[in-house]
Image: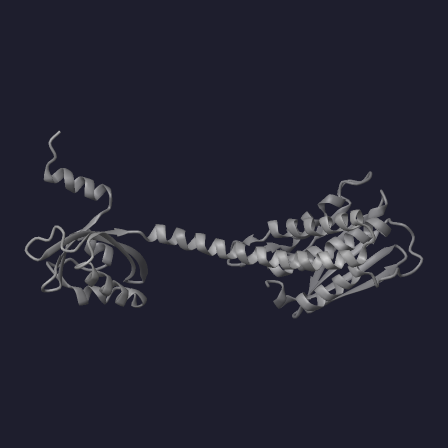
Length: 325
């Protein structure tokens, strides 16, 4: 097959390549219609570099000017990526050509523009994800270190410490699995009901009753830090309930509900059907101290206990404006 000029144009159109030429002595650019459309400009026979550069993002303008000037002396192919302002849109453009005047004809250099906006957005998303993952890993390592020290002080054997620490870290892992972007501009969070349900799911298939853990809370998002704190609180309370409360009995039931006012969210933990309560238990262990410190510091709230004859009713008060943290 013999290639004709129209075949080359078909290939250029298929690749979405925009063509330009640069008259280096007069600093004038000549571009095809695709290039003008890429820049969001009406077509004209020529456009001065300064007029064209007025549409380059201010943060990139000096860099692009220096890069184009450097192509006159640097041999080999070059590629310059920069942002342009096309109306209300910000686009990423890649300018490519040959340096050191290679291929120059009568003072005119030739090259192409490519729209690389999608690639740049993907790269930015990957960088954001990598940064977020690094941030979360550092946070989790710091939390794991603190939990290790607390667990070491509250257990007497290596096996007991390993079990307690594993359970706490597993609860954190389940909570962080739920932290994700939410629809409707609700931010990056977990849904409160989903978080509680997942954390308590391991306790819902024990004994004769199915669905003995019931969660009924309004739809609201909680952020990463709040999810971490709630995971620790719910794990410690569930552990105590398995040892001494409603979750220690085949007939025990646990209901989680919530109410709100203008300032706070109140999460109510109500146990029924467990062993008879003779009085408030000792609440001075490391688990209880961990809960109190986490709630006060991270949620600007408090956890109160009502040891009713039918079972424990605990109320967790949290500041609304801290939920998204």
